[in-house]
Image (cartoon, rainbow, N blue to C red; front, side):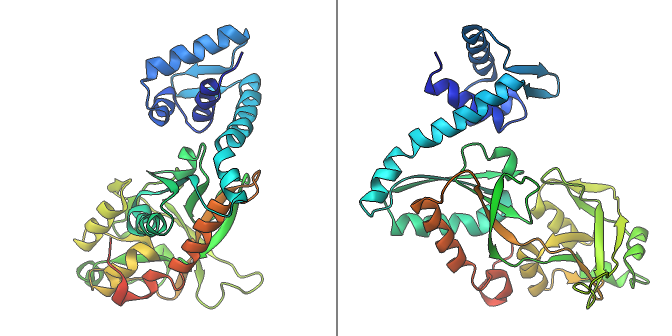
Length: 313
């Protein structure tokens, strides 16, 4: 017999890359998760996961159990919400996953206001380096740029360009910067996040971005300094250690404060709009709709396009 805790175990495994990561989601120790998985396999008489040094891979049987577990848990966990929706009130629980920096600066204040306006609605805000990797059981995932996974439906929240920046002091040391290939002659500060190839930048000439057949140029950059924290990389750039590529929402305040300036004004990087991702298999619940409406109001107009109201992160 499969119990609800078994389903929660598999939902956590499905959204994790290792037993340790699943254990963190379940607030258990890795050995406890390993024992529970082994006992479940023994009860069912089949192998559900392959343990490897690099992580855990679900077998075909494990993937089927994952799909069934997610569907059943969503129905069980939304019972209270469905009952509340029928009465016209908003309650139940909303789980939101967002990137660390953007989540702290913009999603956390939004959740605070949402709680004050709807005290019966429980909200869990999970901040993660890679939000989609921590999306198991999430009602909403905040994404900077389009998601690679087709199993999520994106709802546009706000515009967000990507800027190439450096400190004014570093910019004075640049002999020539007219073309993206000129970047390869200077120190580049790498922000590694979301498991993306962040050393590969694609540029389009300003004015040609929307022309059919317009050709861009791709450059690959590398440097001696890198971090998975955006604030660290921005601080390094402000201190004159090199050039960075940063989202508009993060860089706008630093540019307004004179700590950074934009480079290559004649070229544009691919934008990374702010999106709210919802599981495509679900109808939008009242609590998800409530969050989407509140988020769209909060980001219209985008705070980072109002320097007087924006505090740099």
